[in-house]
Figure 1 (cartoon, helix red, strand yellow):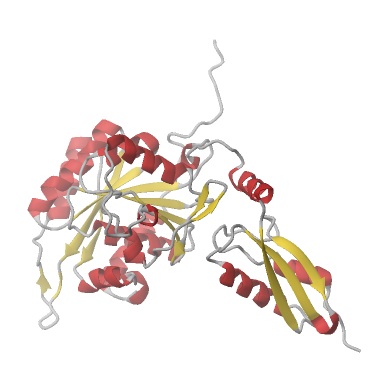
Figure 2 (figure 1 turned 180 degrees about the horizontal axis):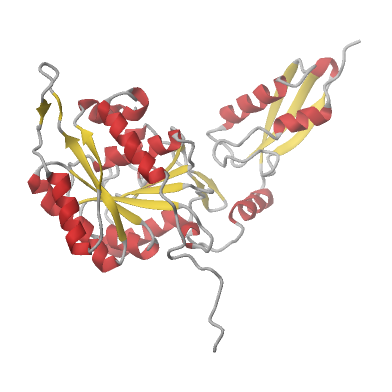
Amino acid sequence: MSTQPNPDAIREALATVQDPEINRPITEIGMLKSVDIRKGGVVEVGVYLTVEGCPMRGTITDRVVDAVMKVPDVTKVDVHLDVMDDAQRAELKKLLRGHDQREIPFTQPGSTTKIFAIASGKGGVGKSSVTANLSVALAQRGLTVGLLDADVYGHSIPRILGCTNPPTMVEGMLMPPQAYGVRLISMLPFKPGGVETPVAFRGPMLHRALEQFLSDVWWGDLDVLLLDLPPGTGDIAISTAQLLPHAEIVVVTTPQLGSSDVAVRAGTLAEQTHQKVLGVVENMSSFPCPHCGEPLDLFGVGGGDLVAEQLSKVLGTDVPVLGRIPFDPRLREGGDSGHPLVVDHPDAPASQALTQIADVLGTRPRGLAGMQLGISPSGR
């Protein structure tokens, strides 16, 4: 006579199954509908999807089957998918957000998410490629990472990370898609005409778009949030300072002195917005000649040091060069194909430089600056 699987063991196995978008066990977020044990060790599991046509239905099914099949005496797992009703989705939203009002979680008391706004003085310096690879390198360190493509007009992060899937909508709450362990939101999936459609937003609409990306998206408990800012010192840079006053600025430049001049302007905006410039990243730095080994300076030399020096002088604080990323055409090629350099070529000098910068960002202490401590004067 065959032995039937232990129901408690099956429940314990299902508690290890995480929803791929929410990253919490399905048993905790109301997604487990039923568990039935049939003759011969066949287990039928009912699962609620958050929405009809959930893009992660296959992944959820596979995770349930893999987890339950590890339970002794289980011979087969059948997964039956259903869809949450409005009331269940409302409960899920309440569970995840803890409130019904739209608010930016990163500005709430007790938030320990480190926020880095990646800026540049002009386009063409590789800022988006640097930002995308840094986000992946941070995720590789085991951190929970979010990436907001704040370049509303020139969004390029989805292509670089190979992730053009739209977010899942749950009761007005956007569940961001993920790529390489990074939660990503961008303007791209909100344009009916696709990537070729221009975004015709003026200042107030840009501000509102950024605000919605911060408040309407369920980011979860992030360790790090990166923002890929558009070049220059326009509306988005100013709105970022207003909405995320504690975000730290990382300025990306190239060794070319002409590039460094405009990069300084992107950093000195922090003097007016009262933000901190964490440091400078020099992209497209010198690299060894493949024939003689001598360093080649295709884009000049000294730009990163000059930006750091001038920002330190203007801001009255030490602004270091966080790293120099050697020129590598594969960084661009990976961005075109959706395969980040730090994933496909982790041993490349450029990847190692990016990883070292990620180590600096990932280990930076949050501190108490700007956080509400819940105390008030005694009135004496």
